[in-house]
Figure 1 (cartoon, rainbow, N blue to C red):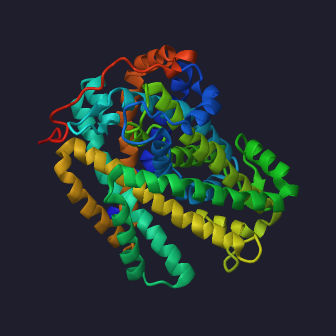
Figure 2: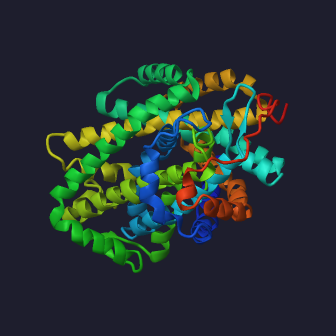
Figure 3: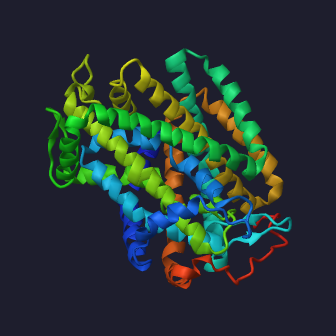
Length: 472
């Protein structure tokens, strides 16, 4: 067995039932522990666009949310949903949607402790995330170090090289642009954004994320209008297929309930990143008067990513398949398509005058580019925790180099390695969420109702050695 096969098998095992049970089980547990925090989702959406200028922090709550969304809303919302349907059947859409509903509670929980245990460096900038929750909340610095190492390393694969490669592939396929040219231009653009740090990344995210999300949603709405006669059948098929195997579109087989669960859960968990510990890294920099406010804002990210965008993609794909079953088969061989990207491309191609192809192309490129920016900040914060501020310039250089290289090489093995590290990140983060669930419940009750506007009386500690890193 080759090294690539070994890595692929480990990846398949990790993102199979073990991680599904860990993450989804945590989602359900924290939903109960927080008193079904999902019921405040519309209050949270309102808070996300409300400024909190008197609070301590480096960026606005909305800026922190859009930066987190820039990495969360990605190709998984398009290709990931297509892959789940192609491999697990239409029922996987329902299971994916449920990971979003229950995952809202975990995103809320991990953000709350990330903000609660954040610290200030000597220059006044905020630093927080799972490593500080583990370090200061559980006094388990070793676990914080493990999380930071996994995140700092896996960011280069899943958030940098793989995403850059996706951009290069789109330009090469659609416009025949040489890979070297795409690599050079993309590397320069990324460098110009990240050189300004979190404030520069946030400014770009605040402009890019709403545009790319609304542009893609508009494409989905157009297709659903075109498929309006099949929407009811699509929803019924999704629900029925989640609980029993069902043929879709005259030959596209939903396989088994187990496969529908596995692919739906895995792709949903991967897409919304609830439980990964990534979003709290940027949420900890937000201007917020207490941990619960920013936790509420951050949980809207899972709502938009999975409950809205992934669901819309699923309905678009399933209704298109019912309307035109031939989109699921290879015209030359007659084999069923297992490529989620190709399935999505065929669905959007049904919009006339190449408009759908353009929408999908813009969506994939902007989703990938925004992910590069969001994951840079995640990786940088973890590197700073480990090695101090001196590593920032080195990390920037390596990141830009990763973008350039990613545009030019095949990345199957790198993707799988990064996927494994990304999954492993969840373990120490989930440990922090579960062991600090009492703190999360107490903070949730503390700032209930009219007390949500109260300022946290606990002073954020200033660490003199925050810039030096825990390893040096």
